[in-house]
Image (cartoon, rainbow, N blue to C red):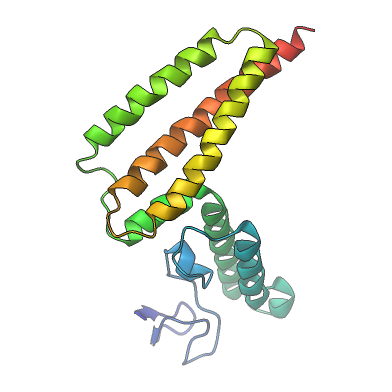
Length: 198
């Protein structure tokens, strides 16, 4: 734990829920979404597990407990709740959860990844061409089904990749998942337009 200055009494205290000097609520200084919610840094977390952890943490900062508190405490409670909600949203998104895992494990997301990006780009060009060539509802639905299956398989591969110490395969799968999610959105938009024509 690191020390912070209490915004209420200005005492230097160890970061925790309450100031050891004045006992008022402290702002959260943790930035790791896993730690914020008290969860292990793991890819395989379920949305239910994340939601349960969020609820448990939010109970600590429930506004009813601080109805008679001063305005600074209420502001801290609001900010802490917002940080916890943001952490939960981040972890519920598989790509953001994976990117955070890579960062936590010291993987540089912006360094020496050109070859991975080039390979994923080449793989993705074929799908993009298929999307552009799909001009009927049937063709779009078949392509969407194919993309959904690839996303499911990609998720399973990511779960396995994060169990290993070499993070390059995990990173490549994260990049690929980002593309597949964009492709899914593109084909869904195209389908929506085709259904509007009716």
